[in-house]
Length: 129
Length: 129
DNA sequence: CCTTGATCCTGTAGTCACTACAGGTGGCAT
DNA sequence: ATGCCACCTGTAGTGACTACAGGATCAAGG
Image (tube, each protein chain N blue to C red):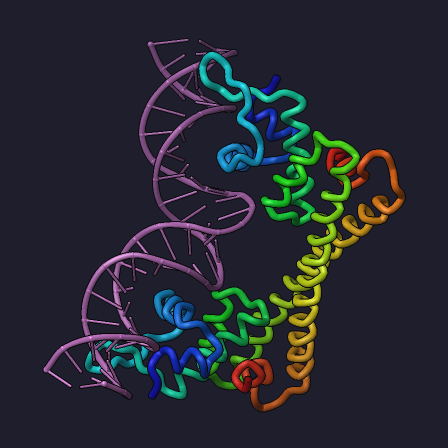
């Protein structure tokens, strides 16, 4: 059993973020010492790492909750996880596409810049549309 | 001169977002009618469109302010705009790289899913690291 | 003139996922 | 006892919006 500082180190999740997850109900409240300090088991740590992994992959918190809920599961939970992951993958791809659009526009602007025009092409582009 | 509703339509920026930009000092306060209603000139509209264009390209608001400040400029403002755009382009590229990493991990997970394992590979992957 | 519906106003709070801080307590070493 | 570090709760802030409440103004129609 570890105090929260140790749990943070072991899970890779910040102390304040751990408390936030608890407050939001993303993870269950841990046991407490007689003096009121949180104390985390290895299972608690594993759960926090799961949450971190999900967040690193960009899953929004509602999805993290859902995925966590599936971890006590059976065979049939796999399709639920698949669904969540597929939808999220689609979101990620949309975001990439958005960003690629931005990148492309920015690149085009930067390109015009190197042509030494009398008028700033970046500002001109931003002003013209 | 137009009321805020018309300005919103013409600029493509929501009424509440226009007020937000004004409150944050991103755009100057417009003139008012005798009864206190905001009234926007064509120059105000053009400025709002500029802000929208910058936001659509993902420039953070401090950069939008800076770019706006450059639009009254001279030749020498072009290098400043270029700097802002270059830094932002770099940020966009970093975000794309992050998302590509997520996409790749998610794709790998989905791939394992279609192999019909007894254990859910998605949850397994999330739990194992 | 009065009514009605639409538009506008200010101020406040909420969204998402954290993150920081204030003020206080507990635990351990000196 | 003192000092330092870790922990606690509660609150507020971040960035960029977005929504809502309660009230005022405006214009058109009866």
